[in-house]
Amino acid sequence: MAREVALLWWLMCGFAGLVLLVVSALWIYAMRRTPRQTTPEQAKRITLRWIIGGGILLPGLSIIVLLVFGVPIGQRMLPLPLLGEQPLRIEITGHQWWWEVRYPESGVVTANQLHIPAGRPVDLQVSSADVIHSFWVPRLGGKIDMIPGRDNQIRLQADQPGIYRGQCSEFCGTQHSHMILHVQSHSEDDFAAWLSARQSQQITAPPADAGETFVARCGTCHRVAGVSDGQRAPDLSDLGSRPTLGSGVLTNEPGAILTWLREHQRLKPGNAMPLHDDIDPTHLQTIATWLEGLEP
Ligand code: CUA
Image (cartoon, rainbow, N blue to C red; front, side):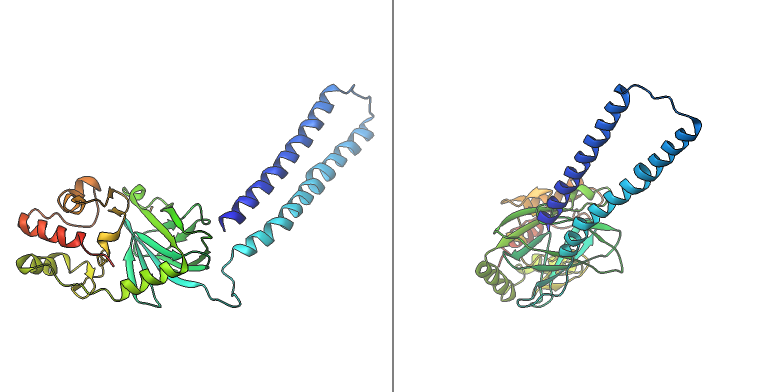
């Protein structure tokens, strides 16, 4: 889709360049020519000719030319029915300020990262849980609004395995810039391996009191497969494998989760997670270490 967008841009740029050349040539000609003497009758005819030719016919023709190449390109970007292999369906929900990513066919849920197979079309159904966000992965395609109560569709396809950056592109509050989506496209086999590893993940709660604290405090909002079932906040079942924390705020390196748990309101002010001042520091440490190990 990004390729079609680029093609359309270059065609429109070329056409606009042509218009600029023609207008400039006419302007130079008008400045250099010797004025003619005309009767009022002739002057009226000339004016009329400019209005019809330059004001109606020329713009009309230009719009037709733009539509002739623009409409088929726009058509090719639509998620129309396909013959043969069907697109993979993924549901993405925008939240202030993170991305919820669901694979309805396999029941896998993740957040702030989108794993897709390369070389296969992916139909993303996007919506929002709160305000209007906009889904955009510039190297893969155009933007699409994420609107509460409405499902929008966009079809993307990454030709090569690789990493692409996505970004919320509709101002959605103070942390709008910290709404970064990490898109990773895998070879078909690697993708299947990732999906089945996620499906068969066996997770046990952190040991002793820290485990109780996690379930009672964190688990009411966060889901960890087999441990807790909160639905308000990002699923943490594969938190250890995520490249960033807080949707692009911190690199997920050793120790970063503890930093995030202690300082998330300083790092990303206004995010929905309450402070953890009242949690025993050793419990917090145990929970952070446990979360670091959660990966498929
Ligand atoms: Cu979400 Cu901007």
